Figure 1 (tube, rainbow, N blue to C red):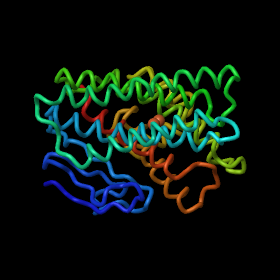
Figure 2: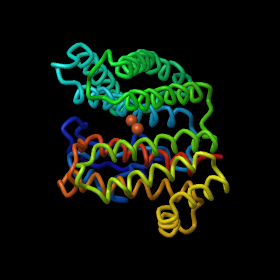
Figure 3: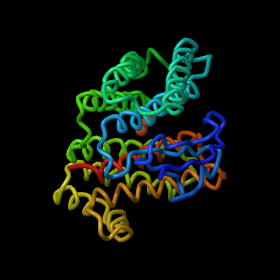
Figure 4: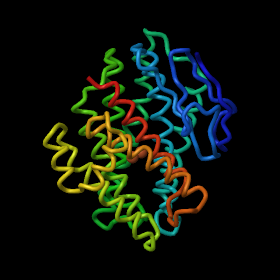
Length: 306
Ligand SMILES: [Fe+2]
Ligand SMILES: [Fe+2]
């Protein structure tokens, strides 16, 4: 059944609504009636049996436009006017443009079957200039031409995400709904590795234990890149405590699924601890919820992957 939940976020629509009955509203706390804080954004995805390209196009477009809007916001937050006035203004432009697109999609029904291609085409048109921006500024930051507070790897990471959304939209435009396991594992284990290293570098330097945990987690995801037994063995020998701990928490899962689920649980706890300042860091709560939602998407795609 389609559910509704009340959103409390400052930029969220008044009500979160699943547009069709075959979609699930996914909250931080399973089956909650709505977001638990003003920073939580709920995720809406087709249920496991829903293979309708129009529903997947709507859900992935709703998810991705919000993610891309937030990339623009995070860049702006890391670009003081004194350092990068023009680049900051451009970043805010992307933030607003994708935010507007996201709100329109979220308020609307999935496209008709014959409208899926143009619906995705309109988003793709906006994604291309943002990919170009991320590439240009990544190069500028790497070469020292730009001195913002955005790491080169953060430009590359968010560009890789945008490029993958572009590939996903192309596949969906051709009616292809399924995820391929190898692609899902290769893409998301790299993203999870980088998230863990971002976290390690944004924590207060006094947070010794969490910083160490973040680096160990990153190493596990690097080893899991090569899916299968070899990857699991490599991860286990590199970080026996971390991998054994994660498999212990998810005993019925394969190594990648177990690590993905553990990462999602870790980020869910972390975002709560960041919101309430139990963790000392310079991690924006919106960034913490952003990476949590990306881990959630990883788990969901892994479950669907063939
Ligand atoms: Fe992202
Ligand atoms: Fe990310």
